[in-house]
Length: 282
Image 1: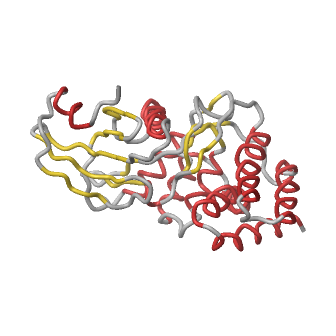
Image 2 (image 1 turned 90 degrees about the vertical axis):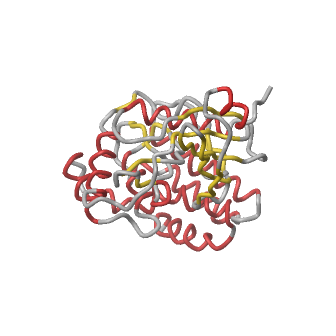
């Protein structure tokens, strides 16, 4: 039987909610800060959420937290239609904010995994993300990132046959452009809106779409919508030793996220998808 978050708070000594403060940033779920007699808690709520969406998010947060590499809000409780999280507070960015983020993300990516995929399927935005466990990274990215979304876009009438065939061609030849890389745990949807500045001015990660994938794909995502501050990339490079040539492949990695945005937000993203397909098909 599903318990309301009000019942859970009462049963766990938080008392009644004294104030509910809406928080911005979410386009899928309602997010708010709950003020209780025992302090504040963050509530994410969506009565129409798929039955495993908040469970998958909770598993991702726990996996990230278990690495000890970067600050993650503690999962307090999860049900089908809501998620209760530790409130990290919020402040302005400290002077070392971007360098700290780069160093901590490099620490996260230094922990290699034996295979690609994840413990369960999850969601990137509202799109279901398939995470079967595979040995080969190129096969995983080709089939369960590019082609999984490309077929959905085609079936929805958002992509024509020519572009689907171009995508199939690109997916089949990923090894021509993407070098062999170890699997690491990545956040999976790392843009500026999913990096939180806590009460102490330090970075934390929220709203993950975790899987065991390529670190380069994570970095590419950070650059998709304007990029992070230069200090982030400098600190990441210094801590990880990764060469800057990942930037040459960024658009190929980001094809996945652009296909996702095409599914979520419609045809305005088709030209970006088509441009990348043309570049790698010619």
